[in-house]
Figure (cartoon, rainbow, N blue to C red):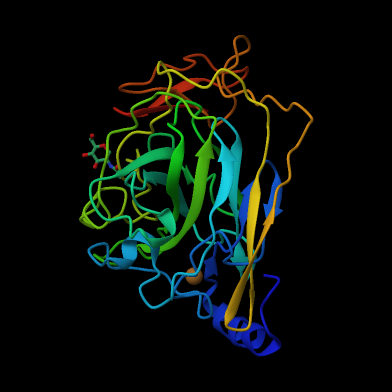
Length: 321
Ligand SMILES: *[C@@H]1O[C@H](CO)[C@@H](O)[C@H](O)[C@H]1NC(C)=O
Ligand SMILES: [Cu+2]
């Protein structure tokens, strides 16, 4: 958290007794870009770090109802890796829980910076479910992450998007409203996009009722024999058209705010090194540990790298375990 004042740091430190967190910085191709809340909408909990627990509130979308919405938009290449940093006490996704990343395309005539993300417009691009083994144990690969990194599907059409990350902490989720949602929304312009049709689409609020088996759950006893990840299946873009080349070009537009006047400093940084990122499943050797390897609609790799086995988690998701 780079731009916190000392007062804010102390306030945040005091709030840390309950081990909460925020996701304030965008990562583009492995590098943290801009300042805190520059490309990510400042969330209501930027100081107290408290989660959203009401899945029917509009704050389940981007958790920014009390903030003024001054984030900038930065470019990301379709097919490239994008992510969020984690700040809190400690600086990681501390609680046992699961993670989802959704994207939503702003209407063609609307600047994403002034778009609220309402409507049935969100599709899932990434998830990290809990891992179960029939009741002996349950583990959470998302827990402890200091950053969340995922690939923007190369078939994603070019245009302006919100990217919404949610970590669903399940440590007190055994009563209704107990699950804690740690949320952030980034503003990006996807370039070099493809011709896919993202879906299935859901709305926030609307995607969850709070009664889902993966949200209203006692994770301790009895140990869940299986886990159902909340939300629709991941859209990988597999099978859809994608951009002809991946150049790894990054264009960053920084809006530097000085007092009340806004001085827009356009900084264009184009990487000349070709860093074609592998977005398709490995041709040989199979998918990595924890990677998806099957499920309804899945058309990616169905084999796992040794020694992992493709294991059915639910109808929509099989995973290399
Ligand atoms: C486990 O699977 C059963 C049968 O499909 C389902 O009813 C239950 O909700 C699942 N439990 C969780 C925690 O997802
Ligand atoms: Cu907490």
